[in-house]
Length: 531
Image (cartoon, rainbow, N blue to C red; front, side, top):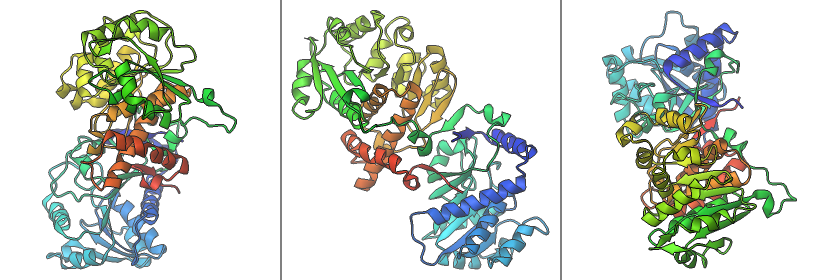
């Protein structure tokens, strides 16, 4: 499949313009968009006994998409109503089509007190927001703002499906009008707009879906896109094959270097996560205090005991670890190492040996410690996966966290290129950058993931995929997707995010993977609407 682009409004216009020139007309794009919106509504897991839908329709292409969707839904047996927030062009054939399909039509001009609008809202199960498209500028015009504000205040609202974007959202900057109606689902056309993954707009989009417009894959405007949004269909293709005649060696060996007396749990979370994603064998190189605390609980993990100094791994342990790399297919280092002088000396000694190391993921304390080594990025194995949160990225780069957060994708892209490694910058809408400039965005922002130990689970997932032979960039994207989905599953199980612990994310990981194998995408944070 073609990756889902993340684009600016101007980039999308260029893509559509070139697609039109190559034979996919704007009219045809509108038909496909409207059909996709209708198909998305029909595919929703919710039940709609009355099959009643109300479309808020604007004067532009977004409104045209909404009218096509209403026609398709009416032909499928839905009772449709179209409320024209702004007048459509004179002689608009789409209005004739929806009338012929049995859709009732009312204009805002004919309804000054919103009496008809209120009646229709009260009797509709689904509300299509097709008022404004991706090219709007804030503030909104007063006549549109009044209608949107009135609808937003109505309670209870039908299930809101936004057409391409919630009306009133700046699709480049992520700003939003106070009148914007929050959507439960936003059905995007062929690509996701950058502003939808920025706040406050991201709080208004709900779940995301994408309707392919059938544009040629070799458009030059598409080739210029460097940002993409991860989706289940693509991630599924990166999962390792699991042949029936496999043995544990088939799925590789992870060696983890983690933990200290003060941060014991990190090693356990990372180790179990590596197993849960499918690694054949996980061995943890730890000091005795960590092994003794975890061994009774993690019976599948094997252990390499290391000398300790002041509750941390001693520097002389570096040679011991280096002598036990035979058959190791992935290395993880960092979770719970601590920031002691002894741990710093160990990390420095380990990477200064310039040994032939397997594919490596460096996380947490490991990142802060390697940052103290001169030319550290040259001493890691090529295409190592670095998994900083903004504070750790600050330690690696010298930039302030404010500067990093103001341009997360640009920062990750820049330093992935400078260092020659994969940079997975954690946080709301995690970004994964390759040295070639490609950046993938994980379309999840949830406080369920904002918990101590959550990153240790992610590190283990990445290491487990690396051990099975997945190349570093897809391994990082796949692990981040599974991790984010597991967080959402755990949040759903509790009914709220405050109680979700890292262990809950770990325990939900099998369900996240099962969802991928089962192709159960309708519940995912982003899904593709099939024709």
